[in-house]
Image (cartoon, rainbow, N blue to C red; front, side, top):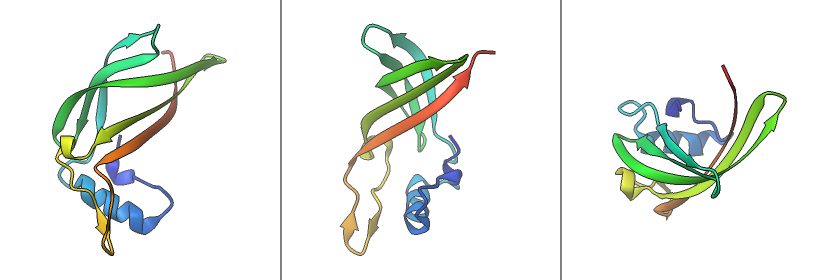
Length: 109
């Protein structure tokens, strides 16, 4: 994922988020898939973010739609686990534990 392209439709928040990610030093985040537990709906992998690689287990929902695989996932992570400093603005700070929501689709080659 290209972190420099982060766009929440809120320019000030996006600027603070890109600063937190230090996109000039760490421009991408990457999830490397290592396995899938179909019975539990879990994707197993490694998340590489901010120069830190950690094992993750992510619950995923998916559906096949005319040759396309649509998926969504939601999980929590700790900013401190990835050596990220939570952004603050006017004395308010983002909590260390944040919710990550991902949606996407793919096609078989």
